[in-house]
Amino acid sequence: MSNSHPDMLALITTLKMAGLTTVILMLIGTPLAWYLAKMQSRAKVFIEALVALPLVLPPTVLGFYLLLLFSPQYLPGQIWQQATGQQLAFSFSAIVIGSVLYSLPFVVQPLQKAFEQLGDDLLEAAAMLGASAIDRFFTIVLPITKASFITAASLGFAHTVGEFGVVLMIGGNIPGETRVLSIALFDHVEAFDYAQAHIISISLVICSLILLSLIYLLNRPKKSQPVLSKRFS
Image: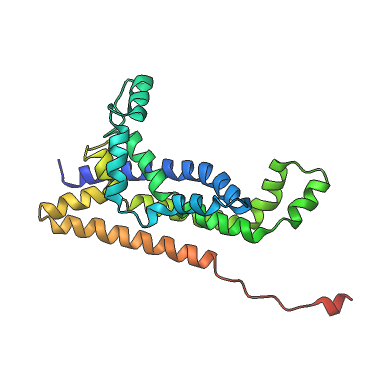
């Protein structure tokens, strides 16, 4: 079997993990970002700091405590094992949960900023016209903040693809289950297989550069159009 086959499995596992993590992040991060954007309590600073903690916390620290919580000796791991019959630690589910926690600020922060800049005037006007909260979200909030949603999803996906410390701590290195590209890269370097390590590294660099370029292009201020109001006055 060629050396590329394990790396293809790692690629598939990485894409599955990043895709599922991104979906969960958007489902969780959107209401959380909205809540923080509208929150007036003094506790807002603490909650924002808690959400942003993975930005400064070493991944191995987060991975260590998650590993303890996911083990059968602690309540979360016990509940999971009783419900599924399987251990949570060193499973695909574990690396998805860890990735959601570790990439959460990359989704919440751009959405929160967009919601704060949106203001309340349009939403209040729509409410006065009888629009429900769901209608206001899909007809006003989502179209206006669409670029921020794309940015949040892209950053969450890209950050998850590049994870190493958290995934290694709680998932180990199980081929086809928890072995992702970052771990495959580490394995090649450790085995002095620099040729294969170069292939993975360059691929990740190129993909990351393309994704970031698209994000910056999307968020680049558009040139203002000439004012033609006088022609129609």
